Image: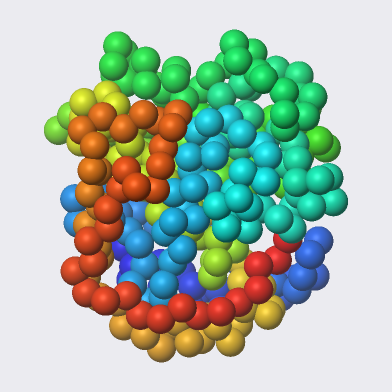
Length: 275
């Protein structure tokens, strides 16, 4: 898996088109794909340190349907600060709202939306349990009607789940835009964790993760960091342990999980997140 990621990263660096974009100059290529099997290990990159606690806290925040970035700030996770501070850390109807309350009217991040809209995550669980051959086992975050209310339109827009012939569950993520250095490693780990948790909930094993990327880009001010990462050699992927036999998806905690490193991850490579 990591070699696939590094190959795409190098391809974008060496062959990407230079573009002036909304928030920075980028090197970019279109339509890239990465796939891997969770039987081979949990895909937390080894060529740099990935903020796994941040991955868990953000995913738990999505699963609760929350859009209040102050909940993340309280846990010292600041990945949504830049896209919410201008609105008092209310992110608008982003991922969690679309996942759990799709179609509901958005008021603010403090409103209780219980029973409002479509709970797509629960629908996925119900279909995997009761209609596992369905072609409609989908979570969709792209909602044009509410785009202007969002702090940031969704990058990872659609997840489609599929029960394989060996009864494992695989997922295909469609990602319209991927910050290759900072964002995609986070998305890889988050999608793999989401699949693992849903599989535990429905009594199946996780299979493959496939990520189809639209705009794969490297920000101009990340280029030096990318070169450092590409100079490193990947090592064996870690193992993810679910410490509880039945983790409550709606109350996910970092302490529910354990990452066992099979080799020490290489050091952090600093780069500024572009909002």
